[in-house]
Image (cartoon, rainbow, N blue to C red):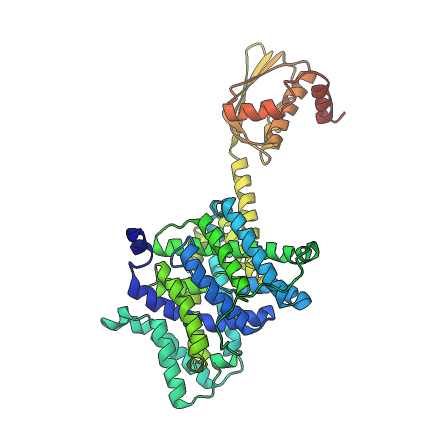
Amino acid sequence: MLPCLKHTWFFNIRGDVLAGLVVALALIPEAIAFSIIAGVDPKVGLYASFCIAVVIAFVGGRPGMISAATGAMALVMVTLVKEHGLQYLLAATLLTGVLQIGAGYLRLGSLMRFVSRSVVTGFVNALAILIFMAQLPELTDVTWQVYVMTAAGLGIIYLFPYLPRVGRVIPSPLVCILSMTAVAMLMGLDIRTVGDMGQLPDTLPVFLWPDVPLNLETLAIIFPYAAALAVVGLLESMMTATIVDDLTDTTSDKNRECKGQGVANIAAGLLGGMAGCAMIGQSVINVKSGGRGRLSCLTAGVVLLLMVVFLSDWVRQIPMAALVAVMIMVSIGTFSWDSLRNLKQFPLSTNIVMLATVAVTVYSHNLAYGVLVGVLLAALFFANKIGHFLYISSEADRDGSRRSYKVVGQVFFASADQFIAAFDFKEALDRVSIDLSRAHFWDITAVAALDKVVIKLRREGTEVEVLGLNEASATIVDRFGVHDKSGPAGSDAVDQLMGH
């Protein structure tokens, strides 16, 4: 027990605490902004961020990853809040948690292995662009002091780590936020601050059961939104976990993360918060600030609540320019610059998948759409590529009455037509043998293709022998094939196959 606690909680205390403090400061304006996007009071997003961060620290499957209220989830909630109000949002949040726990027990987190590297790269680049675009309103139609503060903040972030000794001890984003706040307060600069974003809560969250009727009508209202929130939340969380895995050279339990996200969202809904998920921006801030263990996420959540409730007078003074500088650093650090250099080296299909993921995500502002398009394109390109790995040769005997076909490769929906086209049905033959010892039949389309070839040859009076099916192929052919079946059922299937 103690070694486990040390390995996941207390192996990096200083780094986790300092990183958690930086994350907490950066969470405040984002939680407020996401609340505004969703159409709810800022405290709903702040309570959600506190609750989700604290709970996921204990039950999540990816140490060092930050979860809280997010923009992707907020976009899904807009219509529900507008048409039915906050109470239905809280009910949808609870149902979202239940669906995510179910996904964890169904081991849907394992589906991440079907997401190709090009989709992950596109996801990362799209998020980097969206994070940068989200800062543009804070840099539009503002005074020159804002640009100076932002530039100075970036200078501190990138140059402070080069200072001897102290530069590696204290996270530079934390130094940026504290120093820029001190400068703004001492000089009395008239620039936008966190306090201008919205009213901060002045009380601790309390248990709150959604005030909605418990009937099928309520379920019909909230289920579509809860299902969308569950999918978007798990998708972003799984992708972020994969990215943090790469950044830290460690592994994580994706199915446990699904369950953890569900538990955290249920807790958030019961404390008056909205649904949330993992945040790639805050997770990158955490990792780059030295956070590695569960303590960093717990610290972020606890410090966030303490600051907005008990230190709100100080928190309100934080200039948005300092936080914009931190988020620009996150955007620059998140973007995969190697992907631009690799455009000339990587296959065209890989580049198309990556760019399509970026384009759809940035255009729709919906991560789920972008990843879905990327996964579908990657699957299509893969099927097309594998479909070409099929070679069929044939050899006739001396008298020309017999011919042997040898099939090498994969036969499935993408290569079935090529398989059929390789046979000459007009050739007058007494006997044909089809050697499938080096082939594999994957689906019912492949089985139907074999049926069509055998039946067409037999209709021409040719005796057909199928040889060498491996065990897996033989199983699917025996189950779904009709060329080797007799009786009315087999005859009907043959007639249907031949178009009679």
